[in-house]
Image (cartoon, rainbow, N blue to C red; front, side, top):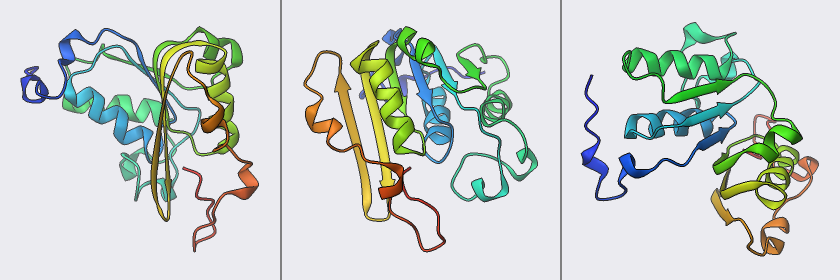
Length: 181
């Protein structure tokens, strides 16, 4: 298998990144993000999601029609193994919700890609605000654009906390789906 990741060395020395990377949520953002991180050569990636693939996930998530009904994290692992059958030890999958005690034990980098504001707040509070995570990155997509928040341990979180709102306040798309992801 080809493991020459020098093409992106102008951006980052992937081989030197030993920090654990945790992707929480494996939907529209998380499924693609996990795959791209693996394809770039990052190691020590753990992805968390408790959801299963449904037909409506296919247009914007990195899954195949044949994977409908499967666990999202197991499907990502299966897809990645299809690309790299000899280099599968860089990905760990957790097919469950992240508990408070589990979140507080995380270290390194957390990439938050969940689909509710309630979950974002929970993950933020238990990983970086009251936990051990050094870098917390959270992205949001809406019908008007995208937002990316990057927080480091010890910084003032007041401004970020002001962006968190109730799930009931989320935008609703023309098809009736809440736009919090």
